[in-house]
Picture 1 (cartoon, helix red, strand yellow):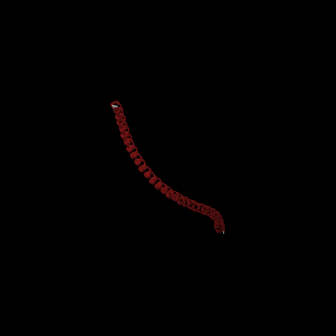
Picture 2 (cartoon, one colour; picture 1 turned 90 degrees about the vertical axis):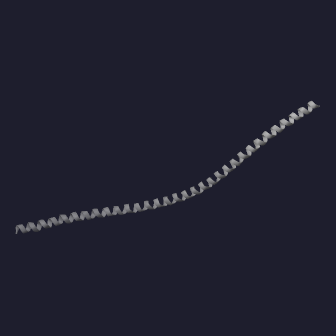
Picture 3 (cartoon, helix red, strand yellow; picture 1 turned 60 degrees about the vertical axis):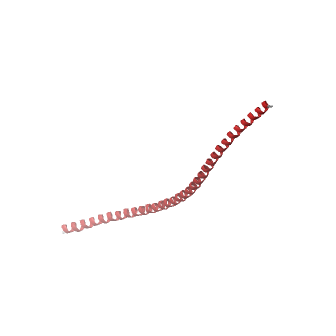
Length: 117
């Protein structure tokens, strides 16, 4: 009977040691779970912040796109106006050249006539 009690006592001690190790492992696992939960909470907050930031960036990009489109329209209008002005300038230059030629002929006619008189 003593032998049987010794074996039971040894088994109880082994179980107690296993329970102590399991309790320590459970405590460590609980601490790890707590750390992971805190990390998940921080990550969730950061994801929310980034989502808000992305939404702001999308709005800013849309505004920039609209501004660029407006500027392109302004440039197109100025380009058209420049082309019209250029054609007008060329027409005026042609008229001036014609007037210059006509004035030259008139001067030659007047002075040529004056010298022949």
